[in-house]
Image 1 (cartoon, rainbow, N blue to C red):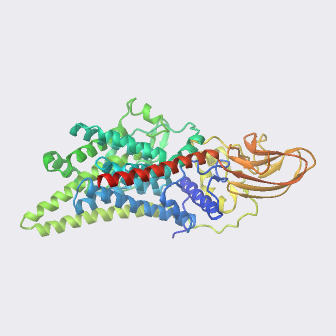
Image 2: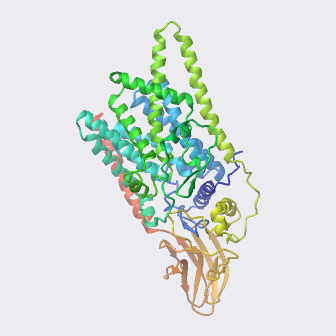
Image 3: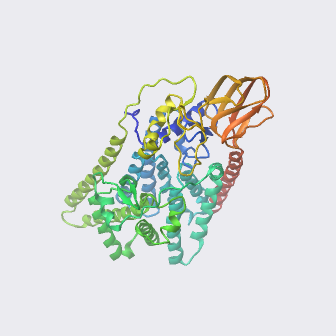
Amino acid sequence: PLNSISAHGDINRGLIFFATAREQLIDGRLPLWQPYMCGGAPLWGDIEQWLFQPLAILTLPFSAPVALKLSYTAALALSFIGFGVLAKTSLRLNTLGAIVFAFLVSFTAYLSQHLAEGYVVWIGAAWVPWFILFTLKSFTRPAFIPVAGLMAAWIFGSGTMHLVFYSAMFLTIIAATISYKKRVIHPLTTLALVLLFAVILGAVKLLPVLDQLDIQSSRLGLVPSLSLLPDMLLTRKHLPALEQDGINYRWSEFANYMGVIPFLLALTGGIMVWTRRKLLPAPSLYGGTLLASLVLLVLVFTHIPATDGLFASVVDLLRMPSRLMIFPVIGISLLAAYAAQVLWQRTQRIRWGRTVRLGLGIILLIAAVDLVMYDLQLFSQKFTLPLPAVARSEQFQRTSASYTKKDVLDGKYYKVGYISYLENMGTNDLCRHYQPDPHTRAFDSSDPLKPYNGEVWLVNGGKILEYSLKPGILTIAATTSTKDRIVLNQNYDAGWKSTGDIQPESFNGLVSVPISEGTQTLVLEYQPQIMWWGAWITVLGSIIAIMWYGLLRKLIW
């Protein structure tokens, strides 16, 4: 059912992002803050928020679980269409080859596995083929440079820096290969311009993210043995976790099930490419794509300082090899698609060609059904919990005993996230490794240094008459007989603003406002200035991009 949910922590986190954003947008405000996780934190400035890309529009008409699942479906569809167009136009495969290529890349488990496991940011994979497509087009038609940059900005806007980084690496190898073979430099300079446009067009999210980023220690990168590659691509059943340096890594973090038939087709295609190099539809692009896929495959399985220490230290990029495996899968799928195309063409010249083509079609159909059934199995295993009927609290409050060491070790504290949101109860411990530790206090806290005083309180004993807390905005009525301080049980951030002359400040890491004696009403609102700087840069970049596209399109075409 569309409203069924999962206990997986990242899915709960994604659901809260969907629901909080929707709540603010319907209320006529920008989705800038969420009070429900990590003690209250910027929403727009979170690197994993997915709001700066077109699929975010699904937030408005649908509930969070429905919007999440529709976003997953749309991501798979956009990925399939994008890779199909890429194969047909740039790689010059015929219709059959393009369909095989698009289907294998999109429905091999690297995408569905991540989405089913809760990595909502993998929605950004929908824009990877379009980034590659328009960048390759830019090598011969510079008018597409800002369009390619926008696709990269949307990948980042979907919540993932990893896919931008690896896509850029993938395209750099392709551009370098073309430059070397054709003795030209413009593919590399074009790619540099594309990435520059990506930074400018994505500034509306990039600047708030850089302002908030606070990398904490995280798990070391997992570098699996090359002997695991057959299991990663061919084993359909659920595989056990792996242990490295005393840490257990879930298999779901790097499984990329493809199936035996596509793998055998890819081996056949490899032999064909090696023996028929002069007959390739686009030799430079084929060579560059296959080389780039091979290089990134090596990065997954090598354990030398250049690939382990350097890359793993940058936001733990090699923690999940499947973040890289999308690009080896592109190379494997290209070989399989080329083999299917050539075999289909050759059967037209033989006596029993129609029968052979029918057999080949049945084999390809079996492979497609196998991948679809595997993907459906993944989602059906995860989204099995019926959405409970809960009563929403009149007042926002912290979850009772929401943080314990045992909960963290067991991972259970993630699983109350979305239900707590529905009850209007916050969880103060759902933090990611790039976020600072929360300063907020839990209800029934066992920490004597952080007693729970409510969600809003006065330090010197005044009285809160009433308050209304919505994501990013708080209305408070308070009375006091002396100078006092209103404290909000939300993490302090410089973006908090207040009505009146006195602005919010930090009080033990929490949002607070000093007030004078008497009865008064305050409105606190989160409005980070850095976002508006980013918005102006993005608007200016958009104007330049439109002028660039229009002018070059007119001059060249």
